[in-house]
Amino acid sequence: MTIDVRAVAVFCGSRMGAKPVYQQAAQETGKELAQAGIRLVYGGGANGLMGVVAHAVIQAGGSVTGVIPEFLKTREKMNEEVSELIVTDSMHTRKQIMFSRADAFWVLPGGFGTFEELLEILTWKQLKRHDKPIVLINVDGWGDKVVAMLDEAVKQGFASVDARSLLSVVPNAAAALEYTRVTEPAEALGMDVM
Image (cartoon, rainbow, N blue to C red; front, side, top):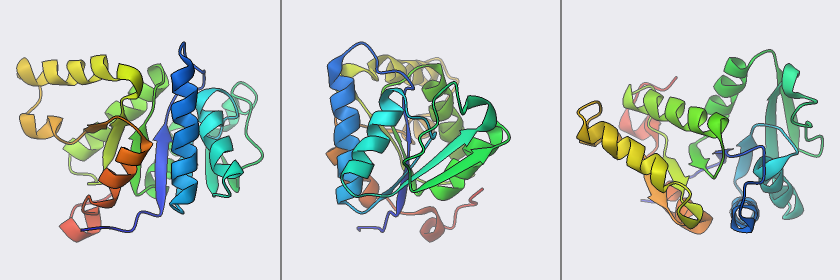
């Protein structure tokens, strides 16, 4: 069944990363979202892959909500070209707003912050606080070690096979869009949404 996805939160690096393919994937992600009429919800910065995704959405005529804490406005160079910019008092508030505004979560290459966002949203889903799709876009094998870590947690008895299945892994943004559109929304499943 196809569902209506109005907004996707994208977690990714505030740096470009070591490979040009990461930037290309970020551009493709932004373009896919804009062409599908899906609003981007992201961390509000103009730097790195975050900035590339947002710029690609804007260039393709799409809508962007940036959410950035006050203390990161200069450090991450706040993106003032977005459709909506929300400045928060903390990282926690930032994540709560991003969560509430998104119908799904996509993860592109990134560093510690990206890992933290992925694991938190995955943990919330495991605890049945939501049932929104979570998709890791495995650009050029970037996510292999992340997936291996999750698989190892299952193997070592720290997570269930069911918990591991809460994260989907796809090769590109087009596949992420296809997966996201056929995943049942939380409201239809009667889940307890945050």
